[in-house]
Image 1: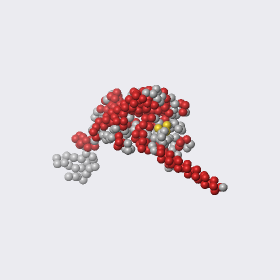
Image 2: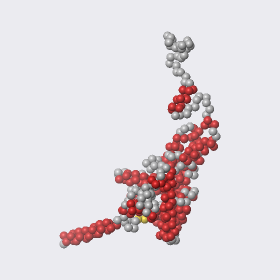
Image 3: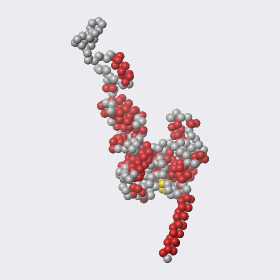
Image 4: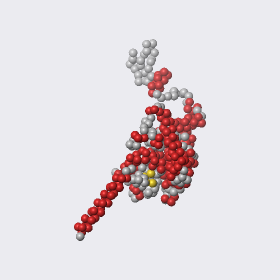
Length: 391
């Protein structure tokens, strides 16, 4: 029952609450709301357990989080939590342990903050960040010296992909003149990467030994390295299938006769008649593929892509292996297919992979010879008729 003044009486006659005054929530009600919201709310006057943890323990937890992060947003969310985590999250140890998945920057999202993030991780000693940023600077942004320095830093730390990329640069003389090629240095870098188990380096060194390119010719050893590359790639594919909880029998093994028709699989053990699905490219290669695809689309739309000149930029060619992404740094840097002359490759490994993947069905020089012969005959006949009309 309410009185004229607005107060309310309970059954016992005591004032329960005033009109417009909020009731205090009990402890059980607050706990229920915290459970419903899914958030841990600290009660007023309660202990702060995060402040009680030492900095070394919190830094170790953040390092584990950085190593297991699947996107750059995982690290960003730590900095947005509180002031203490923002300070500890900027430690070099956290950036040095950032996972490769958190460093996989997309070409469409490339910006100055993304470059600063990769540079921060590289300065902290993250070899994967050194490799990714080095490849982007060398092949995409045109900073040859800066990109080569980052690749060299990653190679000194034992990064297999960086060693192989430096070997490709030495084989082609990228960033310089044709006379700057150093085949022996490229073979040495390739051997070091192959010793670390890099599949493309094993394949490249095997072809070099078979052809005597930069090393003494040894067909038997080259053949052994090619088989080792196939076995290594098969091991990686089976490990990936086991990690994704897929049965090994569910992998789409196919006979070589069915693969030759130009399927989507990458023939790994093609010498023995088997094939496996193609693996995902590295984050740096995927970035370069998307980067040049967007630049080509901008050129087709009549826009000039930033950072490129309208002169020699259009004459530089990409590697024909669709998952490579490397581009020439000077004209006629990459080797062409000796049969058709239409495909360009930065390395023998890319040439071997693309031949088994697609180029085997596309390399048809006979049609070009016939068309060239018809054009030549037509040109001669047309010239004769013109001479007769003039006479």
